[in-house]
Every structure is written in C-alpha cells, then in structure tokens.
Length: 185
Image 1 (tube, rainbow, N blue to C red):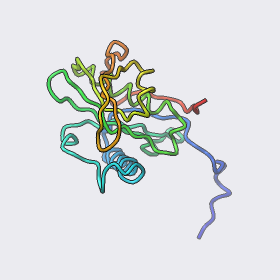
Image 2: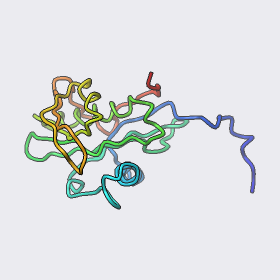
Image 3: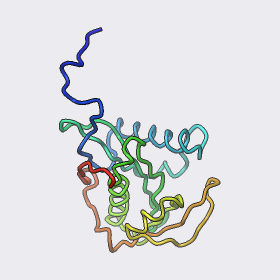
C-alpha cells in the first residue's frame, strides 16, 4: 500500500474551519443527514430502535450543516427538519449535531436560526418544537419561550415557541448561512 502521509501537511487533530447551514438539496446530503439522525437518536441516545424516521419525514424539509475543507463540501455534521402542520403553524424537530462537532456550539444555533427563518419566509405565524429539557436554556437564549413541560419518547421535554420577531425571513435556504469554526468557551 502506498503511504501518502508525508504528502499531507494537515495535523491529525485537523478540523474544518468553515460550515454552510442550508437546505439539503443533494442525495449525499440527505443520506448523510439521515445517517446522522440515526446515529444520534437510535444509537447514542437510544430514543428509537433501528430508525427515527416517521410520517413527518414525508413532508419535512431537511436542513443541514455541512463542513467544508479547501472550499469543498466534506460532510454533514448537523441536521434539523421543519414542516408545516397546518397553515401558519410550523414545527422543528430532530435537531442533531455530530458528537465530534458539538464543541462548536454555533452549529446548533445556526441550524435553529435557519429553521425558524425559513419557516418565517414561508408564512409561519407560529414555530414550535419539543426540546429535550437539557437543551431548553440554549433555546431560551435564542428567544424561545417554554409553553409547558411534557414527556416524549420517555424523556422530559419542553414544548417551546420561537419569537419570530428575532428571526428575519430567509428567502434563500440553498445559500443559507456560512459560519466559521469557533470553539465553545
């Protein structure tokens, strides 16, 4: 086998420094997003057995955080889905960030921001999500309020509502947002 290690100057602890948070529009993004959801919700957390897909996935739109290396898309490192339940009422769900990228807290924040902003652009008057209780403080910092506490899938959650005034409409979800790597302090 040919050893190419001497050609690459990247250190072993290299991590991407640029990410695009966008609407998933290619087959590889959708495939990696689904794999990430299964890894987080089925394997890591044990919330679901086998697969986390449900009837919502038929109409939901997947948003992804994609890492970039040398200006080229590399891998999906975060995902969230959104869907409209009835006219004006939108939901976000299945927010997941790859464990190796969770120290970059801005990825989850950017996914939340795009989810609400895209729904806002598409006519959302209300945007809701069931949020695992340990994540409620993050959502509160992002201008969400808790409506009540509930148990979902055997775990404590908060039903939360986004304040749409803090999320200007995003009319170009394919371009989405570009964000730079910065580690949590």
